[in-house]
Amino acid sequence: MTAPDAIGQAARLDGAALGAEAIVPFAGLLLSIAFLPLLAPRIWHRHYGKIVAGWALLALAPMIASQGWAVALRELLHVTLLDYVPFIILLATLYTITGGIRISGRLAGTPGANTATLGLGTVLAGFMGTTGASMLLVRPILQANARRRHKAHVFIFLIFLVANIGGALSPLGDPPLFLGFLRGVDFFWPTMHLFLPTLLVAGVLLSCFFVLDSILYSRESEARAGREASGGGQLSIKGTINFLFLAGVIGAVMLSGRADLLPAVEVGGIHVDLDGALRDLILIGLCVASLRLTEPGVRAGNGFEWRPMIEVALIFAGIFATIVSPLAILRSGTDGALGDMMTLLNDGGQPVDHMFFWMTGMLSSFLDNAPTYLAFFTAAGGDPHQLMGPFATTLAAISAGAVYMGAMTYIGNAPNFMVKSIVEAQGVRMPSFLGYMAWSIAFLVPVFLLVTVLFFI
Image: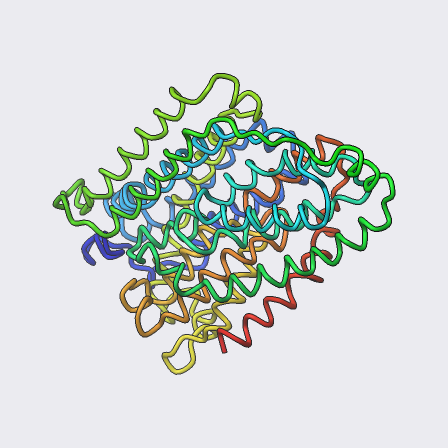
């Protein structure tokens, strides 16, 4: 993989020369993404492209003022070629392939069946991504619990486990970890170093869910009667060829991280890894194959459409453009505008792992967790070999904070709000923004405190 210092130091943006105002476009864009869909949904959905472009253009000003057009454009080219393009190709491929798998029929909406389904979804999220696993299971779970009077909690825990926690074990699981993979982190590094914390978090949450769901189910005579009458339903899975394509995605990503088949080339002064380019071409081929070979009607039955993917692509184009200056400031350490934060994260030159976990997590709760991960990855030095070696617990803390705490709010991770929208469209009343946070604080924070004590102190 290409190291994060692929651009020569002479061409890099000098973060120490940038003031705190250089962070404003990045913060402004993330706050716009977080709150405009809630506070001004009409304005956001009609004009989000213009809003994103405005913040991205504003981000150029401090870079140009600091070191001129040439360096600013080269930094943008660097983040586009090495981070944005492969990131979007992977997301689009997983979105397309999982959209071609349809589960139909009715599961039994019992506590045991619901818990097993959420457990399965948690595992699947590591292979097909949190968005893919959530979209695959949300409709079958809706059908399974159609007779239940109390069911909002099922989808709250779906957000906790499938839309977030389950994505911690591979670069395919959640966007932050794929960015780490692009920066040089080994494919199986999250699997090995986050397995025990993830097992603990998922195990505790599934146990809590089973107890809660059992109590609520015992009060619902109508649901029990419906279950006894129907005996559940016959399940069928359509679009099974897409599981083969998912295996191809895993193979392509793993191969690009381990093989050294092709040389690097220079594009505009940027060293581009051709193994990564080959991976992206394979992913595009798998995406096209899925579109051509999936049975007709499967995607229509899933309500598949391109609009969410286009919105994600445009928003992340703005995120990657506006994050250039903040990353340069973080590279400058205590000499930069974020020197006070860097002091909190380090004690005598040594990273404070629990601070990395909670600061990454708190920002990931309200802002997008992918750029948050990248920011703290850089704050920890940005060297993948050091972070996988002597500072492995620091990288684990950053990874866990970004992935786990995306579950704290509806806006912490893209699938969260997607699940909420789908189930509300089917008549399920979900908690308000603050109501959901009451659930996450009650169930997630105690588990995260336990993770902190056991793994990061």
